[in-house]
Length: 271
Image (cartoon, rainbow, N blue to C red; front, side, top):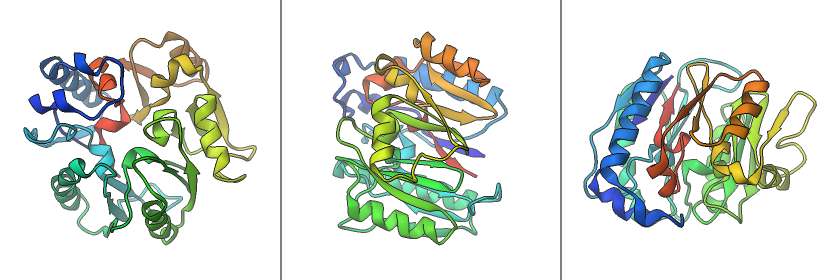
C-alpha cells in the first residue's frame, strides 16, 4: 500500500469547514501535525508519496477526496482501477489532476475511470470492506456520481450500495472500515449504511464496533501498516478498539479536524 499525501499550505486558513472552531485553523501548526502523521505512518512501514503543497488550493491536503483506487475484489493484488473523483465543491476540482498524475505513475496498468458531469463524487463518501463498497449520497456526492462509481467497481467484482447521508459532511465522517469484516462508527454512521439496503452492513460475518456520538471524530480511522490511526483525544473509543484487538496509534490532527478532516482524509491509498 502506498499513500499519496500533500502537506497543507497557508491557504488552509480558507478551508471549507462547518466546524465551530474553523477560525482557529493554524496552517503552520497543521504543517507540523502533518509531518508527524507522515512520520508515524512511515514508522509503521507504510510507503508515503509526498506531493508539493498547493498555495492556491485551501483543501488540497485532503487527497482522499480526489482519487480512489481498487484492487480486483477478493484479492490483495495490484491496483486494477483508478477513479478520478469530481468533488461536489467546484473549488476543489483543480486538486484532482496532480493526485491522479501521481497515481497513474504508481499504477500505470490500472484502468482509469473519471467521474463525469452531472456526477459529483468525494472520496470521503466511499468506504470499502471486503467486496462491498458503500457510497454515500451527500451534499458533496450525488446519485449520478455514485452511480458512475458503482458501475465501475461492479466490473471488478465489488457489490456497490448507495447510502443516504444527511447529517454530516461525508459517509466516512461517522463510519469507516477496520478490515474486510469489521466496521467502526457511531449509530448515525451505521444508520446511513442500513438505509442503503439490508445487505450493506449485515451478515453474521460482519462485526460492528459502535462508539458514542461524542467520539464521532474517532469513527474516521485509517488502517495502515497493521495499525489503526485515530485522532488523539478520544480515550473511550480507543479503549473499545483495543479491547477488540486492534493496535491503535493516536495522532494529533487538531487543525485538520477544525477543517472537517480526519486520518483517512489526508491520504489517497494506492494498493
